[in-house]
Length: 142
Image (cartoon, rainbow, N blue to C red; front, side, top):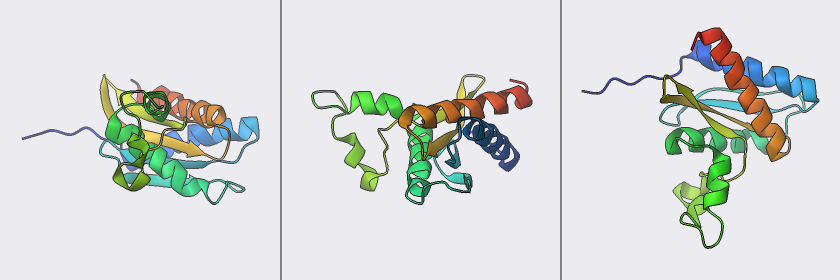
C-alpha cells in the first residue's frame, strides 16, 4: 500500500496568494494553477486582467511540473532538436509544457504538487511561481 503526500486546498490557497502578491508587485495579472502530485487541479485563479488563453496554459504548466516532477523550463531545454526529449511537448495531447512557469512543490524532498503561471513573460511566470512556493513554505513550516 502506498502513502501519498499531497497539497491540501488550504496549501493551494497559500501558493496562489504568494504568487498573486508577486504578480501585483510586478504589475502583471496572472493565471495561477495549483495541482496535486499527480497533476490534478486543486485550485485556479485568473487575476483580473489575466489573459484568457493563459488559463489553460497555467493549468498545463502545473500538470507538467507535477507529473514530470521537474520544472517546465527544464523540459524546454531537454526538448530542443537533438536533445533526448525532442518532441515531448506533443505527447499527452500537447499538455506537456516546455515554457518556463511551472514548478514542482517539494516538501521534505518529495513532490507534493505543483504551481503553474501564465500571462507574463516566461521569466515573470517563473518568478511569481517561485514566490508562491516561498510564501507557502514560509507558512507551512518546512
